[in-house]
Length: 290
Image (cartoon, rainbow, N blue to C red; front, side, top):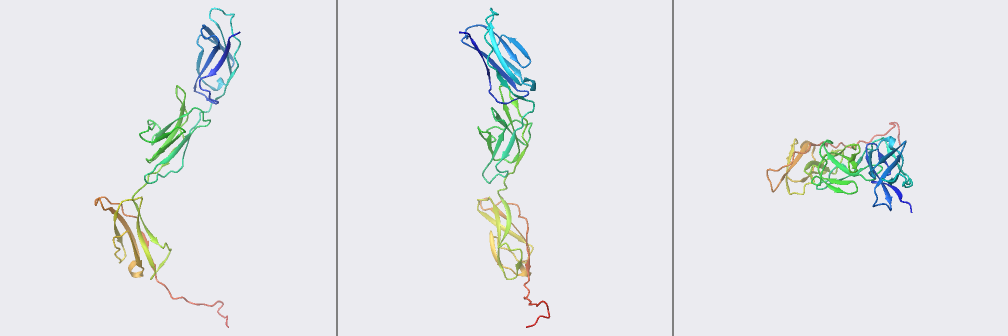
């Protein structure tokens, strides 16, 4: 029975990119204990070598069929048949990673999931970067990593990713950046309930000081340019009076447990109270009579 040669590719990727290191192996089935020489048939040329492994840097001209055969080193007439061909497809265009986020705002006490992908997807390991692409890749100290090209981050910043594969790592282009925004857990706003566009004298309304994301017990402080002095509560109800309540209102909070720890003042909320006018009945056209 004749020995048979078989060509295999170290990483059986369907698409190879120019610049990647490729290793092909010529196996002689049934001749493991024999010393062989190897002949490779590649696109537009042939190659003799004493090594059954052939490693080269792929280029666009590397696309095509590869076959091998072998012969005994001391017997040039003992050659095997040519192996079946293995076809390599090499792209001259370097792939670019794609980075996406399910949201760009980190929730209070939570994190954001990022996904990095490369097409075609075979064999890639993903590398993550924050703020500067030239920095060292992020590690598990900075984020939670998952095998499917995902990670979770709880720190704001500008993020990139790229893919890499092979023993001598071949990197894709960096992805476009995604900015992840941190939360402001103690942001303060003044709200009006009911939130009517116009307030008339005599209407009852509620002004509320809201501290977003704050799960602490707070003390509240108000300032107003009106003649009315608001109580230091998180909300208060008033029956509006044009001369008394019109003005700007703002508030801030202070932690009960830490008197020195307070929020910033909220943006000012302008409350304008309009004077009700007596309704007037008019008839048009004026000549209409009953």
